[in-house]
Every structure is written in structure tokens, then in C-alpha cells.
Length: 145
Length: 134
Image (tube, rainbow over all chains, first blue to last red; front, side):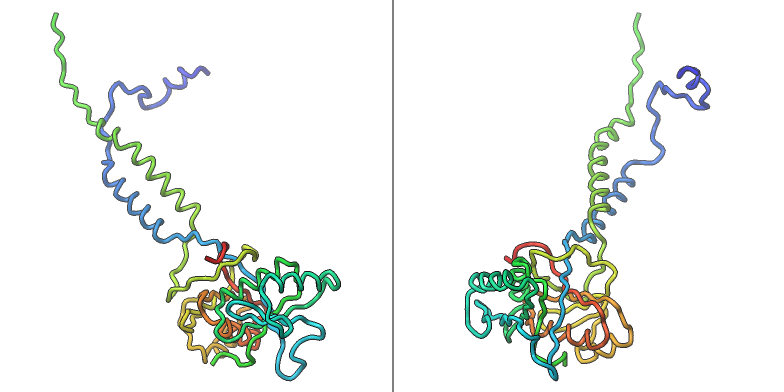
């Protein structure tokens, strides 16, 4: 079947000699589309959420920390590694050194009073980046009041 | 011979001029519909901490919101911090994400973590936003 024969069979004229007036005005259409656009612009969020697995170290009755775990106390500008204040970079080097000897070295992160969550997450990031797999958070022993 | 020139009234001409505009607006609309994500507004403003790693998976979990001043909300409903254990124990979500403000004291978040664990939640995750802390 040739295309022209096909076109001839159509019930409406395919080649219109003149442009016909559109039945629906374009202005209401644009209004609706603009409103939809504004709605989606305001309602959508482009935040790239991530989820960090956290485990809480046991406390109270048993031993405060598992045998041989490194305790990293987070302070506002530095950290205390096993009781000694060190800078973040030094802490990372020492943790890497320990990981070379024991790849499954457990590390406990303990944020002290007045430390923001951002600072704690940064320290957690550093430790995860250094290759620590056994990472847990430890806080004051109370629950929320 | 004089051809009577009919007044050409082009009704569609003004429509033709705004058609590119409509095309662009439609494209923007489709972009926002496809690329964005509709999210329910949180009951209070929370500026999440930034983190370099973490799995990009935060769907299908109950969300515990912690504001910078310590207010809490579980799945959009404000919760008194003292009543958190009771509510979590009643609803028994298996998987909870904590969406806390970056400026909140870390001890509060750890305390909430501990409460959730004690109430029987198996998996707790800390929700962050990808990026460098700035």
C-alpha cells in the first residue's frame, strides 16, 4: 500500500490548506503548566541522603569496652586516643598502624559533652576511611529523658 | 487583472510565538517531576550533618527527627523525648533512621540511639547528606 493510498483513506484531511483555529486556548494550558511547574519546584528536594550504620557500644554492667578496643574520645578541636590528646591526623596514623597488625581492630568513638553531631560524624568518616570495620558509638550511659 | 487580496488574518500567529516557551516550561516540568523527589515537610527544620561516606539507601525506614534544641519527632509526629521509648516499643519499627541536626549535641543522639536499641529496634542508621562539612 502506498502512503498516498493510505492517506486517502483517512476520514480527515491530512494536508490542511489553512491553519484552523485551535479549540482550546493556549493561555489556560500555560497557566496550568506553570502552576504544576511551580508546585514541583517547591515540593521536590534534591538532597542526597546517605545512611550510616551505627552500633552502640554496650555499657553499664559488663566491661565498659571490649578487650583491646581503641577508645577515641571526640573533643571540639582534637581527639583523645587512649587518653592522650592528639590531632585528627595523628589519630588516623596510629589507627592505621593498629589496623596493619590487627585488621579487625575494634574502635569505640565517644563524643564528650558539647561536641556537635557534625564533628562526631566527621571523626566517624575519618575512621571508616582508614578502614575500621568494627566501629561503635559510646555515650554517657543515660537514655533520653 | 487585479487579484483581490483577502485580508490574511493569522489567528495562530500569536500562538506560534509562545510555543517555544511552552516547550521549555514542559521540559522543566518533566525534569522536576523525574529528577526531584517529593518529600513530606518535616515538622521542624533540621540541617543534616555532612558525611563523605555512607550507603545511598534511606528508603522504607521510620525516621526519628532531632532538632538542634533537642525536640524530637517520629515519622512527622512530635514526640516528647521522655515518651520515645514507650512509642517505639508500641509501634515496633524494625528499621529506624535518625535525622538529626548537625549542631545538636552528639550525646543526645547517642542517648536516642541507646533508647531505640533498648526498645527493640534492630537496625538504626544515622542519616546524613553527601558532601564536605562546610
